[in-house]
Length: 112
Image (cartoon, rainbow, N blue to C red; front, side):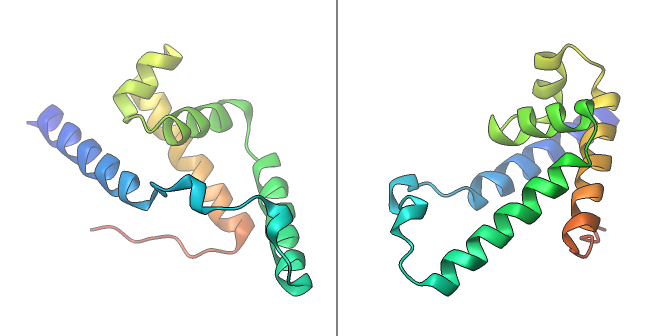
């Protein structure tokens, strides 16, 4: 039962994450296309904040998050790719995302 539940949750999360990903990457121009100086400054500030936030992650958290999210893998697929236990991968992703939320001043999403 637990395995089926976990796989179903992983699948739902994967589908939700897929919906958030821009399926038209060519619609995003390079950063040099930003003409408005205020918009360019805001973009630079956001980029700096994200780089600074990523620095607080330990190597395991960073690798797990990068592997899972950039490759659009489930927890199980990520664990297999990294050759690590699934519980370790889940913990690293969860703790890493929490650190990023705090560093970026975002409220944690409450799930039920």
